[in-house]
Length: 358
Image (cartoon, rainbow, N blue to C red; front, side, top):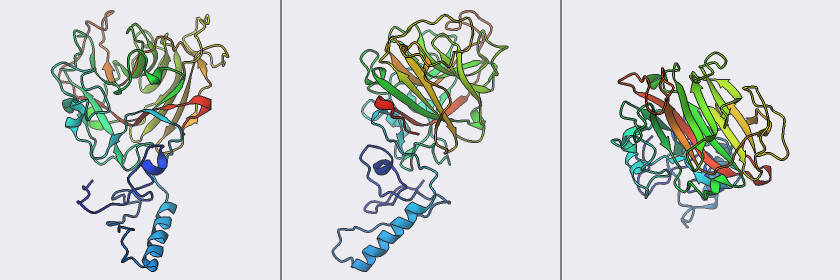
């Protein structure tokens, strides 16, 4: 991706100004150096009085033609964005180390000897996920031997927390909110699926539970019943809500809608699977999914889920050990690890009145 020379405006694809409810600075229509999409190398200052009506008409025609070209990044964010974790194309790794420049908490959750600029990578040659647009880029969260948070020696972990996502009183833990994220695999930093990986979750404010868990690998205690090479959405009680195979070559897009308005009513069940029966008086979770740049579709109903306890969202990797009953503090982790998970299109939107960006 080449930088834009000073004084020259590059025309970009249907992006921030059109795709989201945030102000954008690019003219919609084209993406940077996308082989499938035309690129206007230069744009002209439309306030220039020297431009003739004929030139203006030509420019208008070119822009209209560009808009008609199928776009790989055509997703429209139609709901108010509460917290935005999409990474601007000009972001540098060192930006993650300061609260003044990072969209995420620069101090948590990571190994104490590491900076986020040492943990995050920017995948080369990736055009971004469905909701990234051409002015955003993916990031990769990696873990290594030094990825030990505080004294949790059983885990290898690195988890991004949105700036503004307070442990108590967060705007993302009230009302009805939808967390969006996309994942893609890095062949050079593959996950060891004989372990359990907790990659995205919402942890209660007292750190005693997670309202939901987005996991993969071999789930401890459910080794024989859940396939290891799948992504799984689990409830607070670690019961399976939905799963899908891991795709090695393309983006997988997820949206999780949490209704915090309703109080949780405990439902007796001996099954490891969540009932898909909608419960009027219960707090709920609903999942949407797609692959590549396809629109999201609902893959579950609004299932009962205990969303109480406020807390914060985390996006990254938490690799659990094997061979122990005390996964936090002990167990086996192989040495010299270099593993990663690529993320894109991270944001939380307000889903009041049923609004979900697809």
